[in-house]
Image (cartoon, rainbow, N blue to C red):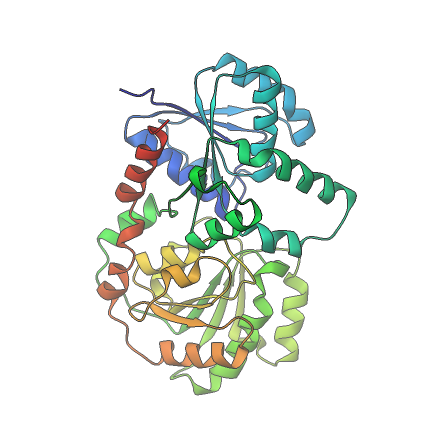
Length: 364
């Protein structure tokens, strides 16, 4: 039998999709009997700490800056030789690769590629710091033993950037593990309320202004008094509230702030909306359909086109605000069968995804 000791290494447990998926996968593998240790650089703003299973050992390095974490990470890896390490960030993966090369560490490195790297680089401002980060990734990232991509679109983008790494790449979709999955198993019918849900960070790459503009166009044609509920926080909150005011829809757009648990928002929403410039996968989409709520999304790189079909929602060309508004009208004025929507989420069930992880982790 293969060694079932596994180390997850991540910066922290803040309220992002990467952190949530890290906890989901760590918990699910721990339930399957794996000896899981989750190593974090810091527990500051650790939103997902409460979600971590008691079966997962937690180690806090107490280093807010990655530079200061180098030696604590090295010390930990030396003490846990012959382990497999799972990482969720490009730069952190690069750091561990460099440490393995320099100190001849006997570890296996699995890295999860959560984003469309080409789009992320275009979206970030040029600076010496960014240049150096990209240089390190370009030189060392592909030395990881296996690269787990969260969608085929993400994998295609990575192979285009680094030709010749196909043999190291695999695709394993993200999963919904925990409360959402448990509730979904007992959800066959819910009373929908007249609102559309946006859930995510209020940042530039999410292009939330498109969602707001599309809702403003669609609202007069919706059957009933609809609202747009925006769950999340970020640097654009003030700017987005000003846009809502300019469009004269202040009474119909509700900024809910960050919520640790948004299950009830999904359950009661008529539809979930995604307007991102790019994604790695689109976790909110699978969370929504697992709970039986249809989805509407721009066809951005990467992920949505692998999730959305005629049974669970609408896919719209990126930037087409009128098209997005028409999709909102179509979905909200229709009656989607909850069980049909849920059926499209079966391939993201934790038992299936964990089995794929186990097969890959045991392949080396």
